[in-house]
Image (cartoon, rainbow, N blue to C red; front, side, top):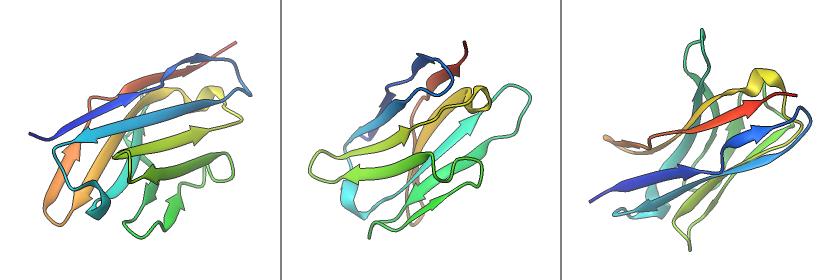
Amino acid sequence: QVQLVESGGGLVQPGGSLRLSCATSGIIFNVYAIRWYRQAPGKQRELVASITMGGSTNYADSVKGRFTISRDNAKNTAYLEMNSLKPGDTAVYYCDLLFGSRDYWGQGTQVTVSS
């Protein structure tokens, strides 16, 4: 059975850093593209970052230069390193794995950036 578990969220002050993890099981992890989404109160869901099977990455303009998406195929885990966090980064962050028609989502992890 496929399982995705996000972790690493929490409360951080502006300018701080967090690393989110998306641990997976029940899939052949290395064939999946990975996307991190976020949804903040009053806003639409936003695609934050993505990484392909081959390791190519893309970022939303709002996080470019501050966030880094990565994957560790040996650990079946995806990461989102978030630096220089701003209050506007406050949201629930979701990990999404995509391979063809297969699309799996985690339950999300809350990130709150506040003084």
